[in-house]
Image 1 (tube, rainbow, N blue to C red):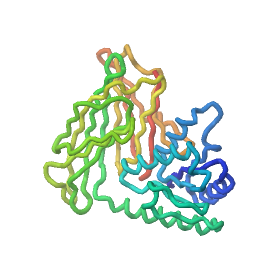
Image 2: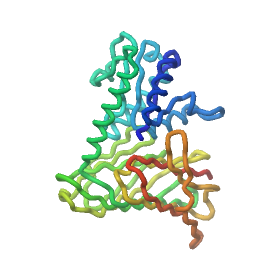
Image 3: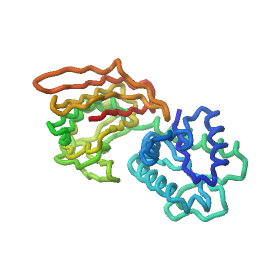
Image 4: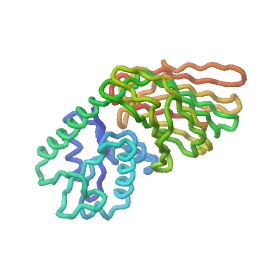
Length: 314
């Protein structure tokens, strides 16, 4: 079921809690700070993870909310994700008699009139319409193999993605690859296509738009490769690599290739269900070869919107 992040100020908490209860009764996976951030957790990192894992941000707008620095940060992050996904992520709910800020004026909003059920039905209607639109996507990923080869320092990485895409309707000409990492991305090469643009939408997200050498027609497939170098990507003691919606991928293989002189203490992949994560251990294979240690994860996506996170520490 879809994941919904509740962005609000603490002054509006009673209303937000009621929405959370009703949304969960409808089967949605709801992220609320007081339930999702545990004692000792970094608040900023927890919010960032919550936003990265969400399908929608339910933004409760009030006079107090527009003065909240936390709400401002969440709105900025959500707007960035909208640009990256080219999709409507923010669903505003206006709970005061106020004028919408300029950056939200082009969005249709829900006016809260204390009729919770009516608002919930409207939210469900929007999500169902978006779901039908997503299901009509022109392209699906049949398989993806991602290999990350680290140098001896652990801070220079070769990123190599081999992928099979299939056009399921119409004609498909442009494709966007998203890479979420710290650090710089250099020397980008894409087979059977030319690079149109490379945009850094925030400090960690790089979007690479490319145009195929010839349009992909219905039922045609293409084998493509994306190769680049990542510089100073993992400076923190604990690292996270988020893999988001895989566009109906049938399978995905992820390979981490480390020097034995610089290998992580632990590395695992988790299937994420909002605030809960299930570790996937049976798909992990570990081999050693020529002073290298290789971790391989073979994953079969079980649901359309399943999300995964790779987590390790040095």
